[in-house]
Image 1 (cartoon, rainbow, N blue to C red):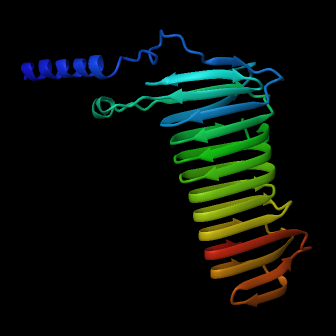
Image 2 (tube, one colour):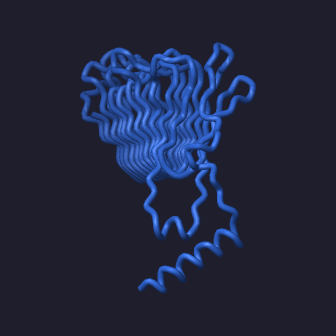
Length: 287
């Protein structure tokens, strides 16, 4: 057994010496750029993370700080009016075989930052939350671009929200926005306590939206998937739905109702806001 460990140590040593120089950048005593002052000139915070569990934490502070617990290298850089946060993690077969490293990244941002933010998630997990529903984090624009992974957003007030998802799962609780755009290739999107306009395209997957108030239009297109739209009982809307191969079910009592094999229309209340639904193959349920 002792001889086995000696041979294993020699093999590992030769691997690092001959094939790959050892990267010490992940060690705590190696200097890394992990902070940046957030001035009024900063218009965007861009976060690019993958294979790491990330928490974005608003605090009473003047700078952005990133702390990584685990293997990897975190960098905070300023380019003009943009501050970029990124993580590099170099995995080899040795790491996967001997270690189960679950890196955690905490990004602390000023709670009064109110401009733009972009979150690019290749894989992993991201959590971003304001203090409370009555004291949300306020931004001008929030762009969420997901390759795969899981995202949790909570207590946010955003003028313009954009979500592009290839796959993965997104849970949003308490989001107020002027415009909300959701483009999902596959995956699951679950939204509750939502206020704002909705424009959504679902290629394949599941979309659930529960709205606290209906204050603007809703436009949803489904290629293949399921949409559940939960509206307040006093919602005023005009419904116009079309299907090729699928179903649109509306539990609201609607007037001027027109129903055929592939079309449904009518109004509820004053009919102020338009709800346009198009289904190729799938189901939409309004209740």
